Length: 425
Picture (cartoon, rainbow, N blue to C red):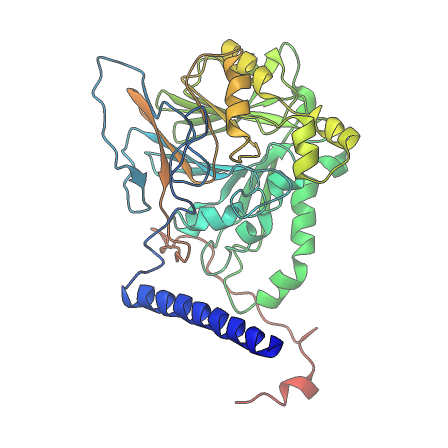
């Protein structure tokens, strides 16, 4: 009797599984393709009325900020898609990674992409998993060769290997990386880039004679952190094609941690990586259009979600910025739009973040999510989410300029003949 019951339950479960399989088959028959992006969750709101994470809406109650009531405004589609053209006078800022060291499927490590109407692209930090989002934007890999690093914590640079690996078939010029010197030579961006190249030596050597060699280098652009002072609070580290990028120091554990301010065509964006909140960084960000600053969760919640002892969580949190302090920074800087990023976005963390922010700041704020898109013009700022194809192939570069030369293949170190002689030709 017992066996008969078990058999009946098994048959019922098999029937349910088959039903699900048939259901999946019907979806395939409906010609649903990977390009038809689906947000992970059905739209919902927190108790305080903010959109829940991963539901296709920016986490804010104000998605449009008008800067000039007399100016003309531009209407955008509800969602950004990679085929959308960028106006010649505007800036587009996209969050490639909004998360923390525990990289999650829904939150890559910290990274931001800035696209300008003059055709230039700039990457600020490249945390683990962020390059997956970057590739889905439909930008030729050859045009993603400028990386600005705030500091070399792995949740801000852990994605550099796949970015570097765009060489050969996509980028035939060096990956250009900007960053500060450290308090000793081994901790600066030049040493970091050299170490990445050396760690990739087997990869690069094996590619010789197979793909062009121009992309097999990293060009480090290290600026001298020791030149910062009270009298010299920032350095102009990039000045090309009307684009200016300034670096300034932030308070984050070691010398070498910096924030960046990019200015072009009367538009501006500041990204500060990680930091203990200071009035100094707020002063360097005054009047900016969009200010993306880290916002860290409270120690008890951080400990609980990461299965971490509370004293350790308190140590970590002490090197970061809680929501109420971020509100104070925004109150000094007065950005047109403040962005709290590097935050653990979950259903139960959104409302506490806004409660903390609103205790000290009343201006427009959005919480960063992966693929949050912010369009900036002289008249307005618009927040949307991107709909991208997770199986996107990067389009070809607009120009084939660059080093197309192949390096000679040497016999040294090649696979031994007793293996190659058995190839199945």
